[in-house]
Length: 422
Image (cartoon, rainbow, N blue to C red; front, side, top):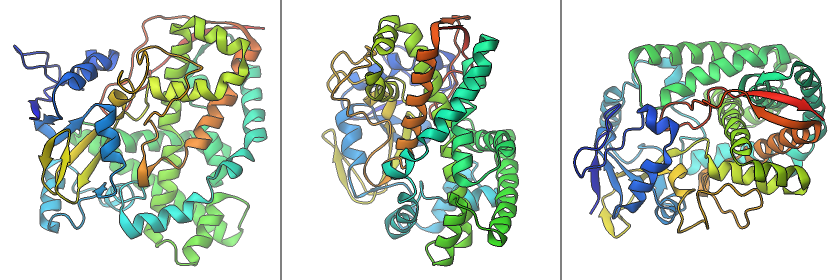
């Protein structure tokens, strides 16, 4: 039978009841102990504060994510007034722009709408299309490292990880380099509201950022309508003109691509670098054999999944882990827990840059498999390959590394390093 747990911030264990407290600083420091406790329980764990059933084992998460009857949205499952009531209960209401462009998106749509939007975007993110960016990414990283190697003491997260993905996805979309920093701020301010703490203050931050983002994209679209370029926003304008997007879907899709190109890649770059520092034998192995870069990057995603939590709703009655659940049940997919499941990965808590096979779930699965995974992995291969080739040593200047708090994100806030050039 499913277990029940509480989400009380800062809560610990109460008697025999092991409380899942994702806002606790201890969870941010090491969520894997809590994940292991969840995996050890029979069935799924009912997370009462969110009315959600948490799946933590690889087998259960995989079953849910690959089930075509599972969806991201409640549309069609419950009456509109119930959806509105749930939005109010979760403080998702009274956010006009956030509701139009963020709460609805390719990520949170299903069926025909999702298929139509994904088809329009998919062709822009194929491996072949992404591979064409390699030289531009390499040139950008090389110029950045020229400066950072002279500087020597850096915050890896802010000075390197945050500089590359946003600029690359910005260039792909057609955003001028000088505008990329504010796109990152808007993206972070929007995404933060998807985590557990949805206070009124955080709500206002998210709505304001969405409004400013919308106004910026509307102006950029107007420029491209007058003078199209060889960029993604011009291609999306063509798709809208061909009837593949509505006006709101155009804005929503642009926002989603830009937001997805920032936060999670920055986070996994930071945690991946931290892994190389915590496991110097694996860093030495990778430095000696750069051909391991693709498997090393995949292992970074498995070992510290940057988006450790997503959800699905059951559109039909379903049985998971031996327990029946009715239509409309909400499931929490703990990718971070599933990717450390010892039943699916040998020595699951060991970081192994040559791990094969490595069928992790960090990119999700099924209809919602991450479209940007090829670009994220290319960014990481170039960054880590260049950094290891151009340094004699990389030292952790401050061993007290603090990770972001929350259930939906995983990555260090900062990572102070000293770079010793080769």
